Every structure is written in C-alpha cells, then in structure tokens.
Amino acid sequence: MSNRKHPYNIYETHPIWPLISESIDKLVKNGDLIEQTDRSYIVGFLVQELLNNDYIKLSNNLNILDTNERESTDGLGRGNCGDG
Image 1 (cartoon, rainbow, N blue to C red):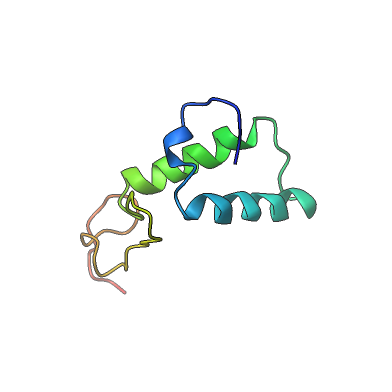
Image 2: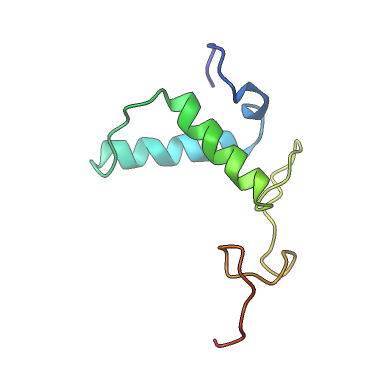
C-alpha cells in the first residue's frame, strides 16, 4: 500500500488490492509488463473497474461474485445469446 495520496486511496484496504499488486509484480518480474505509472494508480484503477462492473463488492471481505450472481452477460455488458 502506498503512503502517497492518489485518487484511489479508498480502495487500498480492499482485500483484492494486494492480490492485484502481487500479480502485477509477477508480470513485471517475468518481463510481460513494464510499469510507466505509479503502482497505486494501476492497482487503484483496476480495483475501481472491478467494483464498477460488479465483479467485487466494496467491503472488508473478499467478495468475488459468482458468474451466476451477475446479470446474464458475456462480460462485455452484452446479453448472452445462449450459444455455448
């Protein structure tokens, strides 16, 4: 977690924050990602996107929604057609 102020401070205590940050560490270490932005902005944006799209809930518990709990969509906000 960062000691610096950034627009995503509210999300730093969410349990998924360290998971995302550690995942980014792995990508950086194996050369798949080059960070050009402060880590807190990257992680904060991703947490915000997950929250805004109902993949996780804002709480003290890690609540990743089961796909059955979400509206019937294909992950891009479009309804499923039912073709497999």
